[in-house]
Amino acid sequence: MAKGKVTFDYEKCKGCLLCVAYCPTKILEVNKNETNNKGYNIITVTAPEKCIGCAFCAIMCPDSVITVEKIKE
Ligand code: SF4
Ligand code: SF4
Image (cartoon, rainbow, N blue to C red; front, side, top):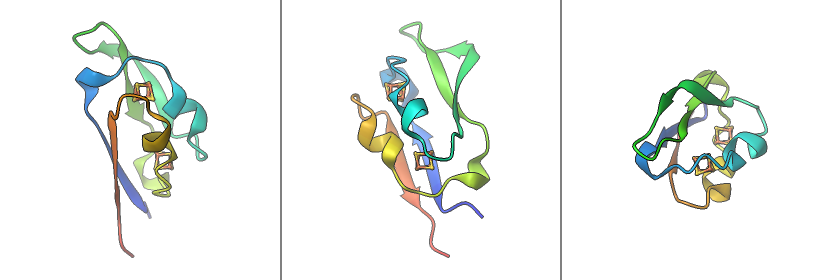
């Protein structure tokens, strides 16, 4: 069961990939088929059910693109 729900403010993303690098469960990936208005590929959650709600992705993101909502068990 997912312990966190991750949402992105895609238009702010600069494609630095820090979130991808720091996600401990490796569920963040570049979506090669979709870009934002700045031309950067957006990030996608490959396995939302595996999110542990740690918020490392949100902490590492330099542009405050990511919001992590903790899911209570
Ligand atoms: S909250 Fe943690 S587990 Fe979930 S996507 Fe972000 S870094 Fe990965
Ligand atoms: S850390 Fe933020 S700006 Fe960088 S790729 Fe991830 S969402 Fe985009």
